[in-house]
Length: 55
Image (cartoon, rainbow, N blue to C red; front, top):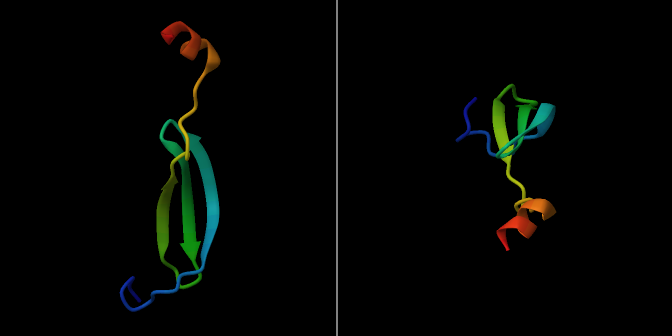
């Protein structure tokens, strides 16, 4: 079964870990398809000590 014929996946996260780009999630669908998903942060982190030096 491929992505085109099976449109409604039921993703379950097997594992995840933070990276510099966001959180990487390794997911598995009940149909056997796997995917890797990157969830980027909505707002970039601002470190107070860096912001104070830049200003």
